[in-house]
Image (cartoon, rainbow, N blue to C red; front, top):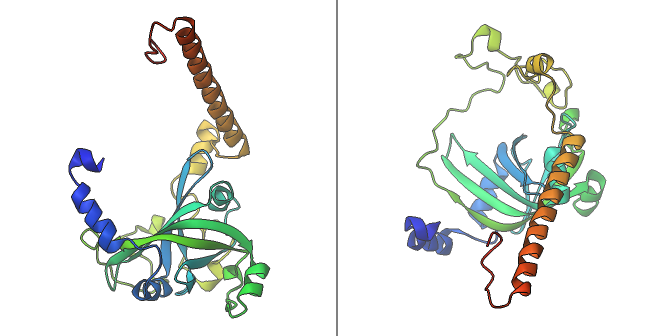
Length: 254
């Protein structure tokens, strides 16, 4: 793609000047004060998922220049990211500072899921969060493979306000309750946002559409069926080639 679009020289310069295989001191300081990040994972078939993680400053912790950990709090029970990591350890983390430095940091690496007790045994200095819903059930341990800047030119500058303020542009019917310490780990659907996008109502009207275990099993079977068909076509083509060595193999449909 770089060759097609003529950007190989610029890309090489970026690799040489900006892409590290570790977190340098400025990166470690940046990570240590972030309150949120965006997380990308994929399962063993390459089916992708992106999500959002938040916590108090320092919840994404730097253990050393090659290692990060972050806590997994109680959520909706789907465990999409953790399930993906169990199948495929590669992940991407994007941190963006919208209000102070207006800059971003990418971290790509390999992850493993670890129990809270095990992590605290290895790192007894980890603090215990005073908010019950914000206490880690599990930790994701990330081995850093790449760390590099996300440039500022398209990052909007935002103003940080109290998390308990309701955005003024929302109509009363769209307003959600203020976020408080007791919201962490809650099952209160209203405090979690309710059916903001109308998905539950749509499911009642049109029937459910879930990415549950049955759908994943069906998708896995489709992948297996596709692979078997591709292997059958290749084998058939090779048999035809071997049947007449005078004719070169011209592809699957030759």
